[in-house]
Length: 116
Image (cartoon, rainbow, N blue to C red):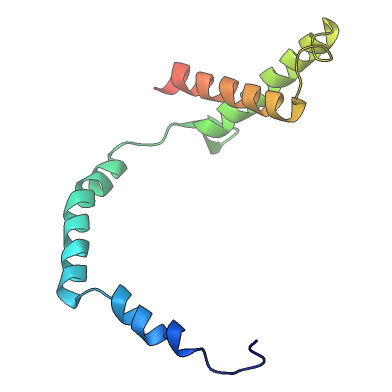
């Protein structure tokens, strides 16, 4: 058994493994160039559209924040409805998953309806 800072056994030579994993310098540069050629058009096209914003009391808010807030409020209303009809105790088993999924559903649906 090894103790302290003894050397590694000769079977596990770290230098041999690093030499095996290194690639030739030209091949690494070629991969970076190919990646740049493939992804540059997507990076340049991403900035062409404006983000939808609202002017609320003189301040511009992104639309996704508004959709998120409305989604949370709709999920609260649905929860109150489920409690009132006693569905929450009978059918909805993992509540910690049900209500965040409902919130995400309402948020994404609002975004698609109003901003797609």
